[in-house]
Each structure stands twice: as structure tokens, then as C-alpha cells.
Length: 167
Image (cartoon, rainbow, N blue to C red; front, side, top):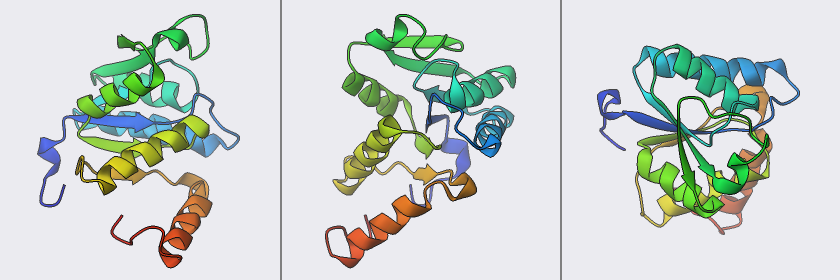
């Protein structure tokens, strides 16, 4: 939000893959992000589990002393699909309820690399911002240029006048 300072940020929602990805830097960035959240006494809201980038950020935040809330659809909570959630877990009925709950618990969104679910979350939250449903900051952690092609695509959307530059 324009003019807001970091002391108003209490909860950051992090979207990221349940895979660590191919490059070791992805997991290192997730771990570092979790450590920074803990150092700044910011609570983590995430999609639950302990695997991949989500596991990295949540474990580092938890070990550093941050409160951690994993929001998990009941179908993913069963079995070992995403692993065990670190600290507190809120189970919701379906995946769209998960995004709504994450949105309601977050002051800011940070996006790590990930797959289709992460793309859905990026676009969903960004679309809500475009519709002025919220004014919460959204940031991409673009390690190793992971999101360069997506950003180029969005530039093309603006160039072709399907998206405004303010969006």
C-alpha cells in the first residue's frame, strides 16, 4: 500500500512450489526468506506442508521464531501429498477456500517459483488488485530470472492493450 511502512506488516503470505525445483538457489532463497521473516518478527501464511520451497520457507521461519500458519484443503491434508504442515494448520474444504483464507490472513504476498498452482495464485491475487478488491503489495522473488518470461508476457499484454500498465 502506498505510504505504508513495514511496521504495519504482520503477516506475509508466501506462494511457492511444493517442489524444490532444479536449481539449488530456489531453495536457498526460500530458506533465506523464512529467516528474514523471523528476524523481522513477521508471521508466515502459506499453503501448508513441509516439502519443496514451501517447506523451506516455513521451516526457516518457524525455527527463527515466527508464527506459521499453513492453510490446506482437506484433500491435500490426507496422505503425503504436501507433507506435514509446520506449526498451525487451518483446513479448508476446497482449493478456492484456501486462497480466500490466505488472502484474509495476509498483509502482503510474495511469490516464489512454482508450477500451475502458483501461476493461478499470482493471477488470482493480481486480478483482485486490478479490480480494486485489495491494495495489498504483491512481489515476485525472481531468483535466477525464473519469472522473466512471465514478465515479458505481461509486457506484451500491455503492448497489445489487453492489460493496462497500471495493472
